[in-house]
Amino acid sequence: MGKYRAIPQGYMTVGEVAKKIGITIRTLQYYDKEGVFSPSAESDGGRRLYTDKDLIKLHQILSLKSLGFSLNDIRGRLISLDTPAEVANALNEQATDIRRKIEALADSLTEIEKLKAEVLQMQTVDFKKYADIIVNLQMKNEFYYLIKHFDDETLDHIRDRFDKESGLAFMNKFNRLSDEVMQLQKDNVPPESERSQHLVKEYWDMIIEFTNGDMSMLPKLMEIGNFDGTKNEWEQKQALANTYLEPALEIYFSKLGVNPFGEETK
Image (tube, rainbow, N blue to C red):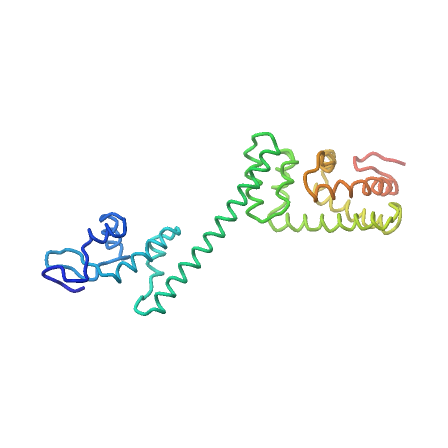
């Protein structure tokens, strides 16, 4: 760092830099202490002296800080700014960081809007469900809106039974089987046919997987499956699939000689 008896042309004091950039002298002194932004020179009287190039570096620091980076992060990201290419690269990095921040904020805004819609549909204040919805939105689970249909006991069961990976895998399986049911319905395949009964068995096995064999959950699942006052295309599809599944399941249980509640039918 150069020493000067007076302030030479092209140099600025810490007060001038603070005024130009719109930050406090104390902030500049702190950045100097932390080794993030130090002056290029110093007068014999100990006054910190800065150049226009220092201001470019300071802009870079403030930009990174506004993006949420810590001073340690910033210290590791600062690069040489001696050529146009280096300046352009620094700006390009900042632009990339800003785009990531914008995408994250856009995702957060979308999640807020979706949660707001769920809150209004629920017509109750239930922060436990709100938290579940937020978690599923952050997981990018497109079936987050089903949470409002479940009671607390069922939600506790889901939390204990499934993690992120297994939960999404289960929903994908459920959708696949529902699509196959819809195709049987479209093809006018009789519920008692071998093709239908094979699918119904797979569907019922999936229900057992979900409940972990707890048949006391079935009435709640049946109530949820009715989707009273359907709101979207997925729920409408499930309601339509149920019109085929119900008689097909009755035939399946009749052949087994039991019903899902454990009572003998033979």
